[in-house]
Length: 136
Image 1 (cartoon, rainbow, N blue to C red):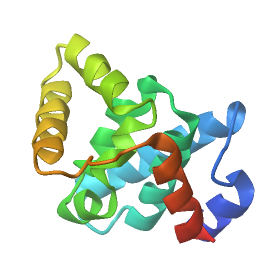
Image 2: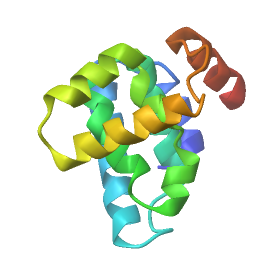
Image 3: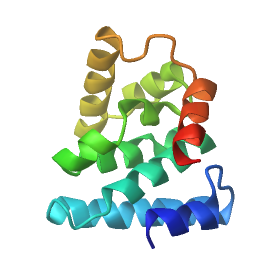
Image 4: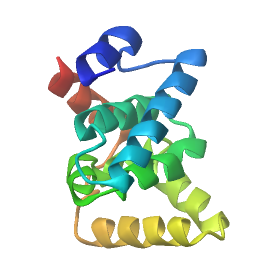
């Protein structure tokens, strides 16, 4: 499946079983991208992250982080804001309660990006709207 087919099949706001399929697709391409940069489809990975961002579940934060951390290309393609579909404060609290090195790394990056101004005037609705315009 490519980006175009995923967008056609799931749209930007998948729900229910479609979300599970998006998670599986993201996990598979993350695995491929970690194995060798370019094996995963980073544009598809970004779309999957946007779809999960729009669902707003904090349970997807680490899945999105793993995708972002899969390679340099993925890191550039997947915006740090996509971790925050459940809101910045909620994401920070969620990452803080995990005792995993990847949660600590994600929280550290989030904090550095916020200090650099990357979350100035951040809102889930505004970012969702920006992605809707991007994929139109």
